[in-house]
Length: 305
Image (cartoon, rainbow, N blue to C red; front, side, top):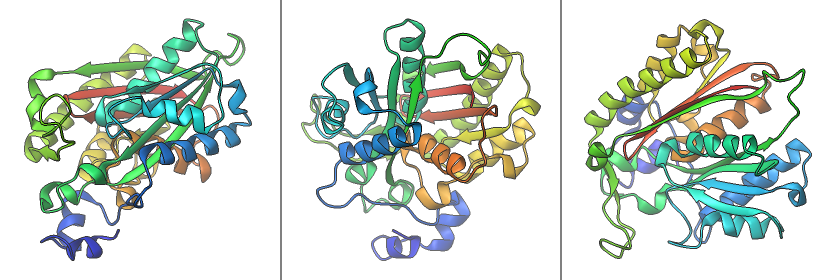
């Protein structure tokens, strides 16, 4: 859905959206196409790229704020769709930070020896929780899914590759500035997304800067060591701010917000998929991921590809 197509539904314009967000289009799931469908497609592609069979997977983690149903977990449906008859599956809910939260969970499962092969998916159908009369929110979001395969490896010559560290934070005092005004326990309906945009923007810039510093300091690195910044794709101005903080040229910041809009937990894996597919991210590169979402939650993950 292009901005011009959206402008036919709500009082907005391509120029207004691009100037404030950098978004030019977004994708909308088809009628009858669910979060689990998007997640399954992403998982299948990731497994094929990795040369890993679904029968080898111990654990499926789906980061999502828009599950198919209240329960069971969307991950359970993905597990069935993949033909898996072993292992476990569950969802992680940290809204836009969900993929990095899921990365932390997957990394720790592997470190603890509880899983050897994990499919981590970020998948969202935010179009289902948007108020299409609210131009302040409906122009910002899209649907999509992306996935990673993580595997345990011997601690040897490649010991500096893989997940170096993850850093998770939340502040429930900010619950009311980015939320959905519904749920099974409150209204009995799914509700619509509500956001205080200026407040979210201000806190995003500060919190993301802090968690990026935390990740680099934990690994005794600086911004100059980072090969690629793969940020949550919420707003081009926030993305540019993080790139400047790290001293990275625009060419070293992976940006898909113009084509995908904000796909919440799916935005980082979608951006990773683009940058790996076109050859930008190569083995050995240091990749920094960061995100902030409702809760408020914010997180960063540092990986050696």
